Amino acid sequence: MNCYIAILLLLLLKFATNSSNNIPDDFTFNGYLKLDGTAELGSNGLFTLNNSSRQAYGHAFYNFPIQFKNSSNASVISFSTTFIFAIVPEYVKLGGHGIAFVMSPNKDIPGALPSQYLV
Image (cartoon, rainbow, N blue to C red):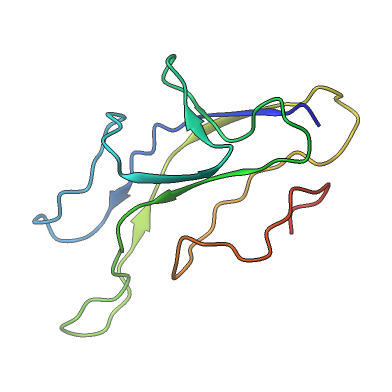
């Protein structure tokens, strides 16, 4: 599963929150993502979640908590994000390549498996 999943995270993380938040809206990587597994930032500016290792996986999580509820009236805050990615498998007809956008209360994924399916 020689899969290079290159993520050109323009990750413009544009959250519709109050203007006092200092959330990055460019691609200057300053540690705002927690990289795990085989994930890395290459010298070319691309995030790679998997390298040429077989049965491997990588994660990139936003490194700071995000409030999804307004504390004064408990209304849900809207947000949007934009990113561009490419999946370049070694063998085009084989499965096992994928990407998922998740929201999680923590940055750990216990039981994550580098397998053929997104589990």
